[in-house]
View 1 (cartoon, rainbow, N blue to C red):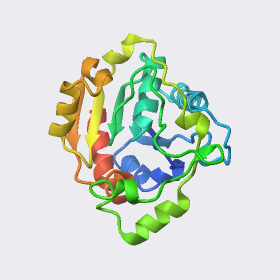
View 2: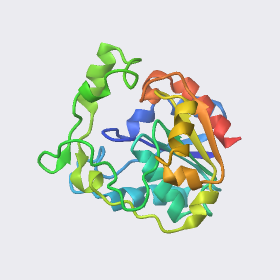
View 3: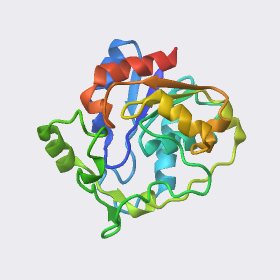
View 4: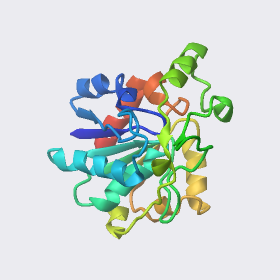
Length: 226
């Protein structure tokens, strides 16, 4: 199956470099999606531009692809399912959940000069980065791509309730499936509360398992295909 991989904030498509060969070894075609504003040098990209890039990848795929979103891009993957519910075999959300209609995509940190830079490791101390070595933290920070304001502060628009028919797998790295279920049941994730097919899968990792557990992450994605 075609598996489309969408990185979260500050990541370009190379974030999946260690996951792609693992998925190919399992018989799948892995396609990291290059997002406008995250790796192409553009600071004027918008959330709509990123959605369009994901939809173009879906339209170019043979068959119905599995769409994988990481962190903030869980919302981006869900927006794609909303726009192409009949073309998406399933959505996998790694370390995050989709925002509901009307929310700002990722207005999380200070905007400076029209972009949202990586804020450093302070906000991610603890389970998020516990599996990162100091050297990996330095490499990540050096390669982090500032996210354009038009992406971070883009408004989420969801229109097609057929998205709730698309199967969802939530990969739980820095939190547990039990915690995720509790948040869903409490109404904190209204989109998944209405989804008809949601699987919660544990993964012993921090927030960025594509760097620290690529083989294990690939196995989880392959299982989501099945």
